[in-house]
Structure formats: structure tokens, C-alpha cells
Image (cartoon, rainbow over all chains, first blue to last red; front, side, top):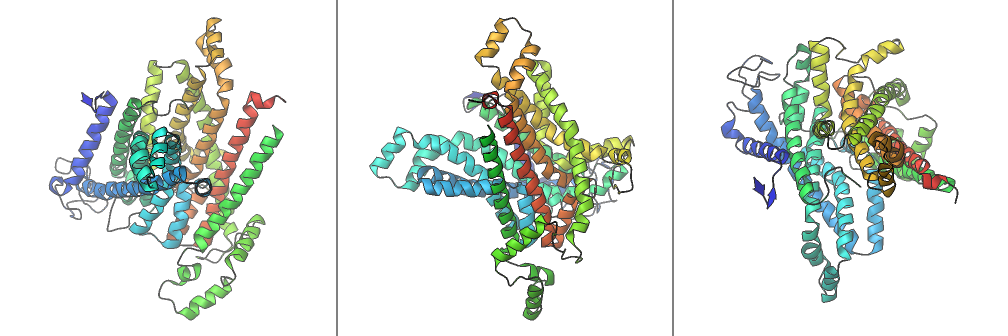
Length: 275
Length: 315
């Protein structure tokens, strides 16, 4: 099988299949789900059976249906946040690389300080002051995550801005925005696309962790992380209820990672190899 | 070499200072100050004003920062908003627990992952290497709580080898405590193992393209000896770096793992404080976590300088 003119490796095919299955399951959740999101259909933590093949949750709701609806929250939040952090990070990174040294130095120092603190710790501190709500969550994670995107896009853009064609565009008198969009961005795309996949995974895990800690998505809304939290005590009775949403997170992350790995291997060095 | 190390230490202290400013600014200057957080949005302005005065909030921010930092350095972390007691009382026991858990995990994870990484490099592209690659790629994708709950289900509930909750207390002996934290420590180990192993392998393979390695091959040395004696010492700097990054990551991963196993550490304390919006406790925990993180990164930098043979020899 081939994609974009490159042979698809076995891992990548599995990865694409996982991502596709997730997209279909989540976008058509309303039609696929056998029950509604809040329908009580049986006993609390009933084990998997023919009708509810992932079992029931802490209130007796169908796990499979909840998983589909929870996925909508998890994945759309992660996508939105990653898109925001990329817009922010790329604009900052390209600005730092194409404008003068002082802006570059100021942005780089600021990012250094933010990156000196673990993201989870910073996020927890912001949430303790602003309280937990979806807009705060989106804003906080997007800004914190944009520092990583800034680093990468700045480094990539630095290598591109010294090229003759960028010099030529400058001499033609093109505006900064035009140069960033038309000259730098297309040439910086491959590493940025790969980074988008990795940042998406990171954000998905990050939101899930916050929700798991009870500081992310709040009831009645549910995402995969808060579903793990709600069902956590089932594990002591040998139930698999908390493992189901956790496995959903893990599966999607593995899928994206496999595709990113393949994407990096067709665009030069492999994931985690070399410097 | 000494000036280089001194420079790093100075830079590290500067970073710590900047981090403390950020921790302070992040929780003090953002909208919704501590007074309204205590009383809620519907409080009368007079009540808010009274609380503000008693907490010294009418002082300028820079002065309050100075008092806060000076207090912190003297072990006075202020009082909790939730119960009014000094923070240090709750923190003392929990900090020791967290350090105990993290160091137990680190003392297993570091030798194991470096060893496996070396084995994978010796066996490059062999079956062991490939298995390690696939397993580590999947392990990186697993959330901490997934690993934690799988371990609980298998080792605590099904096999009943270890306790599923790690509620340790000061009266317990060292051995009992070690037994109690077996599962959280194993979870943390698995979380950082894959990444460390992969990077150790990459660091060694990165050195393998140098001429002196080719020379060693041409002398007819066996592959394992070349890797252990020639490649490993030269790959030490990146390996130390990776180990430190992962130890720093462990500091953060500990938060989720403590919640999974209901372990009385400062991660758990911080999460509780965030949901109660107990800002001073969050600040104190945040500064400890951030300080440890910066400290470990600084240590990595210094060890990397010390391990570089070129920098060790006086010019």
C-alpha cells in the first residue's frame, strides 16, 4: 500500500487504521451508540455482556456509548488546544526568527523560564487561581504548550530565513507576514506536521490526566480522563471499568505515534534516533 | 572546567529565582485574588477588605514576594487557607513520602533502563532490539493511570501479592513501607523506563559512527566490548542528560501516581489544594516541584560537563 508516494509500513498502516476507526466512531457517535449518554440501562459495574459489550459504568450506564460520547469531548478539546498552541507558537517562532535580535532574545528567555517549570505544575497553579472551567483549561494548556512549538518553529525557521529565496523576497520588499506565510511556512511544514501529531498526543494525555485528577472536564460533561476517575473504585472488585477509557486514550495515542514515526522516517531521520 | 561548572550553578540559581517569581506572580497577580477565593464571589466588599488586610494583601506585590521568598528560605511557608494551620506541618511528612517513592522508583528505573539500552545497542536491529523498540513506543503512549490500574488489577486484585492502596504511616518499618509502595514505584518505573532506554540506545548508536569505533572494529574487538569500553564512555553525557530529564519527569508523574494509589505525598496534597483553591499550599507545593525539577536539570548539566573527557583535561 502506498500513501503520498511512499510505501506504508506495517506500523503506519495499523496507526492509520486506529486513527480512522476513532474518527468514524467519534463523529458518528450519535448513530453508532446503542444507548444515550445518560441512559441508565442496568446494574452498577455490570460485567461485559452481549448487549453491553464493554460493561456498565459507576451509575449503570453503557460503557461503550459513554466511550463514544466521551471521545467527542476528549478529542475535540485536544484538537482545538493543539491547533491554538500551534497558531500561537508558529507565529511567535517565525517572528523571533525573521525579525530583530531583541524580540528573539526576549521571547526565548520568556519561554526558557516557562519551560523550566513542569507543565502540569504550572497548569495546576493557574487552575487554583482561575478555577476549573473549559475556557480556562483551553487557554492555559494552549499557552503552555505553545512554548514547545515556539522552540521548534523558531529553530526550523532560523535555517530557512538564511536561504537566498527569503533574501530575495525581502529585497523585493515583501511584508514580514507574507514572508512567514509564503516562504517560510511551506518549507517548515514536514517537521511541524510531525510535531503536531506528537503535541496532539501530549495534549490528549494532559487533559485526561487533569480530568483524572478531578481538575479538568467537570460533570455532567465527561471525557475519557474523568470516566477513569468516576470508575476508579471498580478496580478493587476486579472490574475493568476504569481500564476501558484509559485504554481508549492509550490506543489513540499509539496510533498517532505510529503514523508520526512513519512520517518522520520518510522525511529524514527516524523518531528518537541520532541527535 | 571549574569556571564552566560555576557558570552553570549561577545560571541555575538565576533560573530558580525566575521560577519563584513566576510561581508567585502566577498565583498572586492573576484576577480573583486570595481574598475573594476565600470568601467566594458573593462576599461583601468590607469582608474582602478585612481579609485582605489580615493577609497583608494591600502591600505592594514586590514586597509581598520578598516576604514570601524570605519566609520560604527559613522554612516558613505561611498558613493554609483551608484550615489555617502552618503549611509546613502537612508538608513535612508528605515530602518525605514523595521523596521515598520517587527515589525507590529511580533506583530501579535508572540501572534497568541504561542496562537494557546498552543491550539493545549491542543487539542493534536484532530481535531483542526490535521488541524493545515496539514495547517502548507503546509504553510512551500509555497514561500513568492506565499502567497503575493494570498493575492493581493484576498484582493486587487477581494475584493478591501487593496492597492496592499505599496508605503508609510514620510508624511503619522501612521494609513494610517498601512493600507498600511496590506498585506505585513499579508504575513510575514503567512510565520512565521506555524513554530512558530508547535514548540510551540512540546515544550509543550515535557514537558508533565515529572513526575510533571503526578502528576498534578493525582491531577485531568483539561488538559488546567496543560498546561497553569505547562507545559507552563517550555516550555518557547524553545518557546522563536523558536520565536527569526522566528523573525530572518522575517528579511530575508522581502526582498522578499518588492519586491512583491514594499515597500520602505532596502530589496528592497539591491536587487537593487546587480543588479547594488553597493558593498558599499550591504555591508551596509548586515551588518545591519546580525547584526539584530545575535542580535535577542543573545536576545533569554539571555531570555532563564532568563526564566530558575533553573538558576534564586542563588546557
